[in-house]
Structure formats: C-alpha cells, structure tokens
Image (tube, rainbow over all chains, first blue to last red):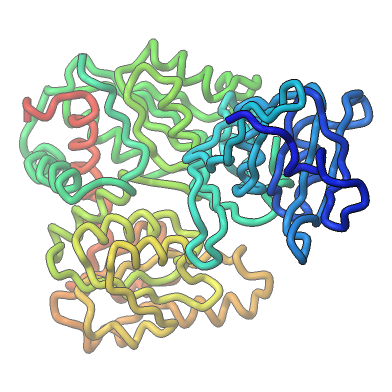
Amino acid sequence: MNGDQSNYGRSKKLGDKNDLRIKAIENGTVIDHIKPGQALHVLHILGVNDNFTNTVSIVMNTGGERGDKDVIKIEGRELTEKEVETIALLSPKATVNIIRDFEVVSKRKIRTPESICGIVKCVNPNCITNSNEPAETRFIVTENEKTKTLALRCVFCESVMTTELFNYIL
Amino acid sequence: MRPMHHIISTKEYTREMFDNILELAEKLEPVACGEIKSEIMAGKILALLFFEPSTRTRMSFEVAMLRLGGQILNMGSVEASSIAKGESLADTIRVISQYADAAILRHPREGAALMASEYSSIPIINGGDGAGHHPTQTLLDLYTIKRESHLDNLNIALAGDLKYGRTIHSLCYALSRYDAKINLVSPPELRLPDRIAEDLKMRKIDITITDNLEDVIEEVDVLYMTRIQKERFPDPAEFTSVSASMRITREMIQNAKPDMKIMHPLPRISEIDPDVDATPHAAYFEQAFYGVPVRMAILCKVLGMEDKI
C-alpha cells in the first residue's frame, strides 16, 4: 500500500490551479475527504489548540469544482481508534492516511462504528449518563429514516440524536 | 450458575416471552387473591428501592412477595437514606446486592435501571425509570387485556397523553407482538413520538391517528385512557379544553361494543367520569389487582422459581 503523497500536492507543479499547495509531511497523518466545513471540528477532536506545537495544515472547501472536501495534514501524530470513531460521526466518508518518511504507508476509509462509548454526551438532560453516576455514555449508531443521515440512539434512555453532534462530543 | 435475569424493558420481548409470563400469572392468580397459600418465596427477600413516590407498583410488589411467603426490605424515603448524604445509585445497588435476593427500582432518571443492573449481583426489576420504561406495568396491561378481553385480533384505542406517557410507549411495542390494530387518540400536541410510530410501522402494525374519541369508540375492544398532565400546557385554557375533549362519560360509551373494556393505569383525575365505574366496561380496578399475579410471575421468573409453581 506504499505510495507518495502526490494526491495531497507534494509533487504537483507549484502554481497549478488545481494544486492544494500544502507542503508534504515527513511523518504523521493526512485526513482526506473530510466533509466540507468539518475540518475545524476534526482539529478540535484531535486536541489541536494553542499549545499544539507540531505542524498542521488545513485546506477547506477544496477538490472538485465546488470544493467538496476539507483536508488536514498533521505532522508527528497518528490517530487513536477513538479519534477515528469520533471523526466518523462528523465525516463518515473521510480517509486516514499514515505517512512515514514522506510515503503513504497505510490508507484507509473511515468505517462508521456500529456503536460508540464515551465519545458523545447524551442530548437528554435526564439521562442517567448526565448525572453523577459512573455510567459511560453508549450509543447505537443508526440512520435517520427520513434524512438518511447518521443518527445515534442512546442505549440508556433511547433518545435519538441526529443534528449538531459536534456540540455533544465529550 | 444460571445467567442473571433482570427486567429492564419489554421493548425487545418476543410474543413467547410475554406469553410465558402471562401464563405464569394466570397460574398464580389464586395465590394473588389469597385463595391458596404459598411459601415458594420463603427465605427470600425483595428490596424496594423507590427514589420516587409510588402507590400501586410498590404495594402490589409487597403484596406479591408476602403472598408468596417472602419478605420485604424497604429502603424507605430518599431523605432518610444514604442517598441524602450523596451516595450514588451505583453504590447503593452494590450494597443492597449484599442484603437482598432481588430489587425493584424506581428512579427519576431514564436509564437508571439499566445502569443499576450493570452494578448489581442480584436481579433488578425496573419499576419505572423517569420517562423511560415501566415493564411490569406493560405486562400487567397485557394480562388485563388477556383476562378482560382478548389479545388475538385486538382493536385497541390508546387515548390521552401519548407523547410523554411511558406506559403507552411500552404498551405499543408489546401490542405490536400481537399484531393489534392500534388507534391513537390524542390532541395534536400530545401525539405519539415519531420514533415510536416509525418503529411500529417497521413492525407492520396497523395504526390510525385521530384527536376525536368518538371516531373509534364504537369499534374498539379496549379503550386505554391515560391522564393528561396540566403542566404540559402553558395555557390553562388550552388544558381545560383538551382535557374536556378527552373525558369518558357514560353517554359517550352508549354505542360501544357491549364487551368493550376501559383501562387506565391510575391515578385518574377527571378523564373517566365516576359514573362509568359502575358499568361493565370499567376494568381499571381489576387492572390494579392484576398487577399482583403479574408481579408474582415476574418475581418467580427472576428468582428462578418458575418450576415450583
């Protein structure tokens, strides 16, 4: 599965109008095909804040004629399984590419998990998981019948969450 | 060692699981009304953990345990227990697990019973978790329908507060196992939540929706009334108008089927006129009694005593 990062702009001629113009990374992760507009949320999930010192590149609303994706490159950092599951909630079609020594050593599509634990807070303020009890949140990942978008059903109180999931990420 | 048998929700129960408990309840009915004495629960202790007020659920469990020869351990009011000192439900359950053989839990938060079952080494019976589930009520409702009417080819109207009433939600899922025709009667603001209506459609259940009781009263076998709570309506005038439209009177049931039964989980406030009590349609006090044999059956089930009945 080895390859270079050409899809992410490294070998393209500088100034090409289709070029993403992001510098290649030596070791780290490229998260591609992020749903447009979700890149900043993904950075939040990865804990990228004022204290983060590694190089991070973000391109928003790029690719295709209408700019149909966001891309993040993050130096010196690989994603945990929990981070991948969380990103899947916001952007189920994203791909995660691990870069080592400038080469793509692994490329995988994010798989939406069947269930998630301890990632999202329940929308129902009266759910037992929103009390002081030692109850970690647990959701079944499903699909909203009407909108065909991702939906989360709380195992404890059965509340269904479909929109603004980012606001509930723990 | 047999696996722990908790009763948290009946949502995923199959028809066979329901039938099994209803058959046990029928066998236990003579014990429930005191005709036959039983000692099958001798030496067993049931803990009552009521974090919210309860009359029928608590007392019918007490009666069920006592009539089966078992004993009761009551946590008492929240104010008088360690909960008032800030003890978590998880810790309370772990402690009570050391004292009793099974526990019935009523708690104001949704999901409390499921969480409790994960910390418990004794069977947990959900006696109502906030607006969530109340499985023993569902089972006694089914049993009442079976005893007072019929579960096969049932045509039932569920009326009143269908939005917030946990009793109604659980009963809908249970009735879906018997392919009942369900008529939903409520003011528009108190309609059954979409997610439940969608689940019922997935189970291919025939549903009708109306806000007028008179549309269905002549054709149903059972009319299940629930209380509409005043606090659901910001405008008191609107509450008065809605509750008046959901009130059963003797006149209204004149053209009902002769064997049509009216059920209500109680307490009722004004939704059934007291004049109806004396008619053969009223089944709500029998319904309250049926809570005893059904809860006996549940206790026998969770404590592995089914074979001793």
